[in-house]
Image (tube, rainbow, N blue to C red):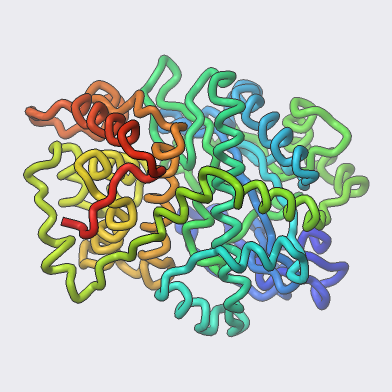
Amino acid sequence: MLEFLGGSSLENATSVYITGEDSSPDVWFTPRPLGDLWRCLDEGFDVGRSLWDRRSLVAHLDIEYVNFDFPAAPYIDPVRAFDLQRPVVDAVQEVLLAYGIAPLHVLTGRGHHFVWRIDRHSIAFESLAKFGRLPASLRARNAQPQPPNGETVEPKLGAAFAGLGQVLEYVAHRVLQRSATECEIPVMFTAVEAGGNGRGREVISIDLSEYGDPLHTRGMRIPFSAYLKPQQQRWKLGDVVDQIPPLFLIPLHEMDERQGLLAMRDIGQVVEIAQQASVQIPDQSAGSESLVSAYTASRLADWHEFFYSQEHDPCERWAATYDCTPLESLPVCARVILEQPNELLLKPAAIQHIVRILLAVGWHPRHIAGLIRSKYERDYGWGDKWFLYDASARADFYTRLFAGLIATGLDDLVDLNCRSCQEKRYCPAHQCDNNLSGFKSLLLARRTATSRFGPLHSESAV
């Protein structure tokens, strides 16, 4: 565990903080000093480390099986859940290896973590810091002292983390291209609901969500830590939790996946693996330099330039711009999301739906992000969520993610229809006169007609 924290002792570890959570459902961001590690282990906590690191930029790619109707499925039938992920996992390894990146591969309760680090003095880090984009609100937040030690996120590190998010979006595009037709169930960026089958609404998630939040708020579980997510989600999984054996994160070391699934449920084997396997996060700066170069020459990078070519309307103008959005011209399923954003606009599938509809009717994608941000920053009962996270960064990230799939041709909108909206359970119960197929046709026509990667060129939000 110390090795994964970046050192041989707590005194020389490079992780800025750890987290430790029990089986309570009230899991909330609680950074702890590294010195709390032993107490957290004595308590049997689920222990994580910060992505924020004093020596490196830590890259983390998360692949997992998600079932929205039967969330216990990956724990009750792990072999099937992991077999379904294999085309995506194979594609991740192939794509990264093509650039010379050999990450640490860790098995979790629902999927896989791929982790590597980029030295802060490397060419790759400098490149990421140059093109990473942060809204002013996040730059200001990074400059404030953060718990547990009162440290600030250095401007160059914050920018490099944002740039890393753009590059891993490119990796995800390549993985999707290689794996989508090989998978038995849909492959989604983040946990976006798909239509159901006999086993529920299930997807393979390429989870990039951490890159939509401030660096200092995100972390990852430490190998050999107890994996308590089933217990923390008892409210959702039910009493089936009592049938799930203790789970531990382990590196996939000298074993195949099925052997790993057995080992992570056997504390004796977990201890044995810990005595033999390194979980030092490997320095892959040279390979990351090749990856960054490929990204900067890509169609996605050009589209990112288009996305950031406009700014959100300033908040003092919202009353005359975003607040005046003509909702009556939108289908009811989209209108409800904007009228009742808490908690709908926290769900990736709902954001995806808004992005598609507004692109179809002529919005520039950056103004779609601005509209979503304006909802986050209005009083819809968000509590203290946006005191911890950043509304502008979150809105930009998800809008960029979903609009980029459309602009680069990876999303042909096959599920932008009323039947799919009903299956995803985003269709209001009352009757609707709109037909989503019309919006699909309009958006596909816009994409075909433009020579630019972004299909829309409006100068204002309304």
